[in-house]
Structure formats: structure tokens, C-alpha cells
Image 1 (cartoon, helix red, strand yellow):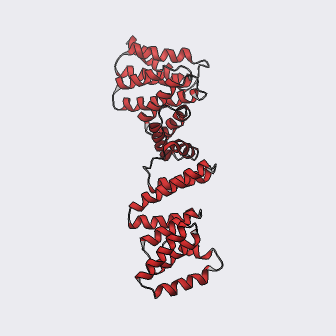
Image 2 (image 1 turned 90 degrees about the vertical axis):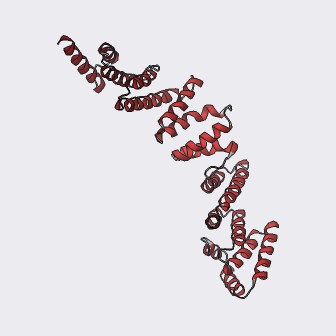
Image 3 (image 1 turned 180 degrees about the horizontal axis):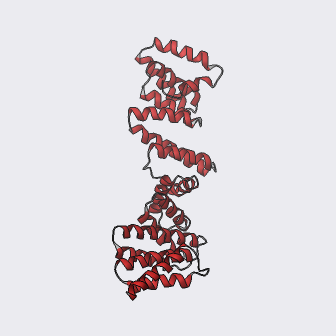
Length: 314
């Protein structure tokens, strides 16, 4: 018997003896009788008698544990009773028999979730969309993708959030929702360490919404990723590439710590290219721009200036 069937029988006081009757009857019935039970189960389902339809399916499963028609009938009947977890167990049994059932289950959960969402049952809709995406990760949720992306973002599930943001933005690139989702999309990509993609999303955000209330956060994150990528380029001895990235950091002079950090990295790149005057200029900008005159980056800039001055005198 597939997972969940035992739990189903325990829920109603008359089910223990009913289950015994089912077992006894199924043991002595033939193929035509099983088909008759399935026919009756589908009629009951169509009439909205979901619990009775479920029992007809269970009767068949007592005889044939992997009868796909019976498994499908029980799964659908449980879903119609809002017993989603039990239904999911049967759908998984079906998907193990034939992968096509996974797509069928995804479609059913998606359809029920849309009904829930329109009825204001957003939490249940979110649970059902989660199930739908587990059965079919590539499923297009249409206008609801951005809603689910926000849910996954709040739950810090960065991978699903990023995938849903991408799907939602691809389907609705010009809607007002774009302004609200670009920043969390960039954050999700950042947590996934998908740096180039995160930079593209944040660049679009900063370019499109100069007065957005989260602009300062976006600039900080954008600069942080650029510095990370510049260091990676320097480690590959791609100093020109690193310089290009660091110059992008300096376009936004609203985060003095990030500006100083970028200038220190920039000065190091110029030193590696033997452009000592440009390097010294970067270090001086740090010293002149550090109000307190203390700190790790300030001390490093002073040390580099002293080293460059000694080298010049020698």
C-alpha cells in the first residue's frame, strides 16, 4: 500500500472494520469487479463524494498495490478533501511508477493554488504552489511567480526565490512589480554567489530607480560584489579587468568605507602594472578622504605611500 493509506483508515471510527471488509472482499474479487469499483469511484468523485470515492480506490489497492487508476483516484480524492500531505504521498507513488504523473500532480496543485489565492487563502496557496514546484520545478506559475518568489525570499530559500524571480520578470518585464522585485532578486543571486548575474540585476535596479528607498542598500551590495570580482580578477593577474570593475565602484561615492576599499584595491592594481603615480594618487585619496585618520585601510594606504616614496628616492 502506498504511503499515507494507513493514516487514512484511522481517521473515521467506522474505518477499522470497513478496512477489514475491503480486504476480505478484495481477496475474492476478479478483474471485472475491480473495474466496477473504479467505475463507481469515478462516479462518486464526479458527484463530489470524495471520501466515498477514496474508499473505492482503496478497495482496489488492497488487491493491486500499484494500480495506477486506483492510486490516481485516491490521490485526487484526498486533494479534493484538502488532505494535501496524504495526497502528495500517493502522487509520489504514481510518479515513481511513471514520471508523467509528476506533471499531472503539479498541474492539479497549481490549479488548486490559483483558486486559493483568488479566494484570499494565500498561505494555503503558497503551500500548494510549493508542492507543484517540487513535482515540476520548471512549471510556469504565470502571474503568481512573483508572489511565490517573495515567499521564498522571506524564507531565505535563495535558489527557488531566484528561479521564481527570473520566471516572473521574463513573463512580465514591464509591470510595476519590477520595481519591487529587482533588489531582492539581486540579493538572492548574491547569496547564491552568482556574481555576474547579481551585478546585471543590480545595475538595472540602480539605473531604473534612482529614488528608490532601498537604493543605498543596493549600492552597497553592488559595490561589495564588484570589489569581490575585482579581487578575483587580480588573482588571475587580469589587472585591467580589475581596474574596470573598481572604477564602477567609484561611480557611487555614497559609501565612504567601500570607496576607500576600492581605492586600495585600485592602487594595488596600478602598482602591479607599474603605474606608480596612479597608485600613489589612489592611496592619497584614501588618506585625504578618511575623516578619523585611522583604520585598517587608512593604515594600509599610509604604508603603501611610504613604500612608494622610498622606492622613488632610491
